[in-house]
Image (cartoon, rainbow, N blue to C red; front, top):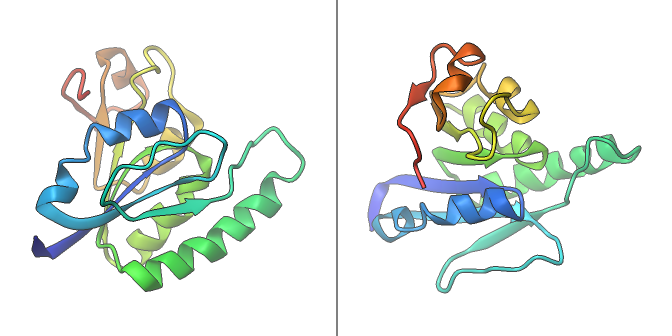
Length: 155
């Protein structure tokens, strides 16, 4: 494994996570880990470190409390793992790690959800402002992300 980069693959559970797992071969080439939400959904790849955050639903009253705790947990994980690249497919729970890595000089790569064809995600709209590379999978999203890189379906 290369010691040059340590990668954090970050995604919420469910579809975002399944899309992110398509990038798992990167962890065979580079040192890294997965960051996701702790839910009843479970799909832990073999021989891979997985760290968990609280699931955050922006429509629930406790959203800000969960997000605050995720900030604390993300700082702990950052100190422990020291990633210098985050590749993220969203959502809200992943924002703290994305911003922490940027704060400490790391790189942030965001891949907008394949399911979003004609409108952006809330996380994408925020992360677009900070990402070093921002990928869209549908040309229609160019209206929202004019500087994004369109590659078609990444998955």
